[in-house]
Length: 65
Image (cartoon, rainbow, N blue to C red; front, side):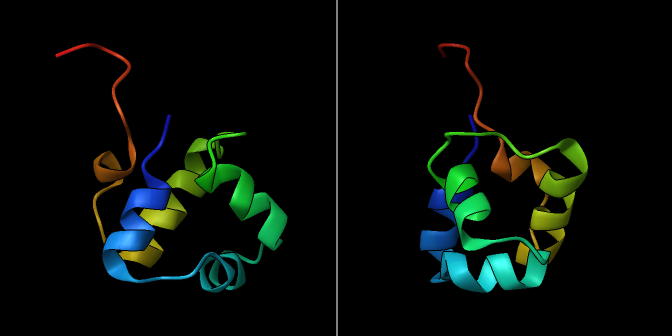
């Protein structure tokens, strides 16, 4: 699971803008945001770079705390 949706909302960024910056289709980015599919690791790092955050902030642990 990823936190792309939460981070976009926190920063007030639209999925269409992220899609443009990534050079990906809106549908591809929407799949990442809705957790229907997970981005490859290099794409995850690219998203973190675009959003100016640490890649760890995009990851959600499956472990119960």
